[in-house]
Length: 630
Image 1 (cartoon, one colour):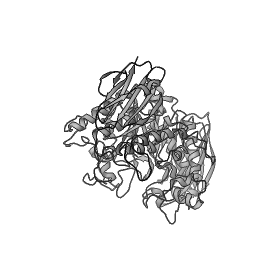
Image 2 (cartoon, rainbow, N blue to C red; image 1 turned 90 degrees about the vertical axis):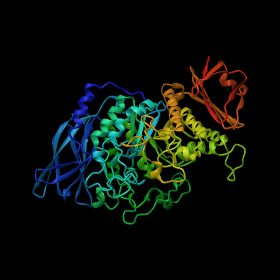
Image 3 (cartoon, rainbow, N blue to C red; image 1 turned 180 degrees about the vertical axis):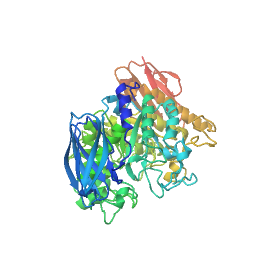
């Protein structure tokens, strides 16, 4: 990622001001507490409305006043619970940053809350989004590095550390990621996607982060808000952008709202929760019944993940502002939105519109786990949908291509599939040929595996040759590559599908680990070889513009081989997959349209030089990444 490594005086001033207020609660003059979210805001947003959710005992009985030039109280919204008051402000374009008191008057009492308005960072590099020039390293923070053992257990949080339990907390944290940014950079990654770091104050199984209990607070077992921002700033200084994993669809059942829900429709199926149908296609099905659409989008994943009702306008405003707050507070390079299609689709249009309006150079990737390219394309910005649905979402996870790649590598080229699917490399070719349904296929995020599926090494039967083919494919194909932590050292989960095992601890991330992937100590020859392979390709890809933005031309697979080219006006790369058990003589005549003018090549993987005459010899079960030379 092209990142601005210079620190301007304005940016330093912005950081100093941001430290002034990180808590969402404040003591009033009468000794009572008020919770106000968002805890601070910024001047300079294109849309000037600001919702403050205020929570306090019987706060709905109070009136509100403030004095700050350019800031006005638009309206007050009182709801069923008397302990909430929604205060809508207008922060005009002329408003200057500063601190002011918000006064709440009622019940013969006066409560005050000091509110900070900061200046929105004007540098576009501060929130420039990730792109096809980047390679993303996906990290599950609890399982990467324990940099601060002092925060392993925190009083009142529950779910204490237990490394012997695959589903327990293991102690990885923000400090650990800071400590190992050098490793990530040296591997060649230019962006990191972090599974959620916000508070998950759940009794058990909280390590994964997808049961948020406070939308404005980092879980103290990871660190705190300031440490998260320090991680982002340090990463940016090294040319690494940070992508935040967010969840609009649901929260954790221990969220503080659950003790005092604002309204009767704050949650879907609020009085009698129901499990989602998981029938994604119902959102696009032109014949779907409303019952089935609601069963998909309004149902809960599990009882511990209440499903949020984004049709409630107060909750919708809250969630949108929370996303904007984290983007500006941290200086993010992107958002990965969890379970994207499960949220209300009308709200998703507004959410994606607002984020991209305020941050035009930002990026968002949505998770829609379907193998049908048309279903994925439905959600991408620019798609002309039959039902008129409009989205502003730039990117999605390319699950169809991941599934096709796995199937292409594990299925025999000449056998028959009972379900009539194409076999072997032809299945990969045909899936990629469906790119015509996407408005922008180059913006999709492609990956061999992630935190919710078996490790790619396991998916491929722990076959080293197939592993190299898969990684080379992901790192040279169109789109934005994402690699899961530990994939580079062949982490696997043979014989099990337990997510806690899939997300095992990264070796060397804990004091006393016998194996250390950061230093290479204890790695097997196979693991070290895989790590070097991935590092070589990533560092080559980092500066290879033709792989970032070049055109793609592929040829129909033939006799166990698959050839494609990435090319532009100045450069050309030829990638060759050979699944044959023996050496293969590959005739070059059918590739003349792309090889003309390129008599030689250098294999990026082996370093070997080749003459591109009538044919080249492909090693058995191999992949070549050939830089073509004039």
